[in-house]
Image 1 (cartoon, helix red, strand yellow):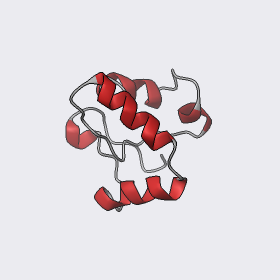
Image 2 (image 1 turned 90 degrees about the horizontal axis):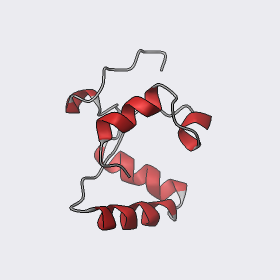
Image 3 (image 1 turned 120 degrees about the horizontal axis):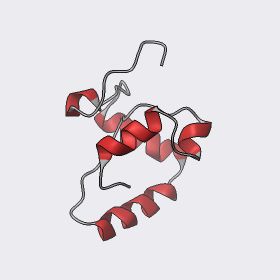
Image 4 (image 1 turned 60 degrees about the horizontal axis):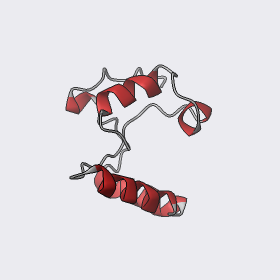
Length: 84
């Protein structure tokens, strides 16, 4: 959950954050949700964290079956190189 998606993507892609993203080399934005307020966003994040991995995969694939990086289409980041 973030109020600044562009800044969060920059942090992830440049390794300035610790945790899951750094450990697993996550660089692509494959899905996002825009919610009305922080309370709803926090609730949604907590809900998704309780989901099984298969449910999360199905959620991504229902909207982005090829797992394409969505960030460039939003004007938030340069496309990743083919090796990433």
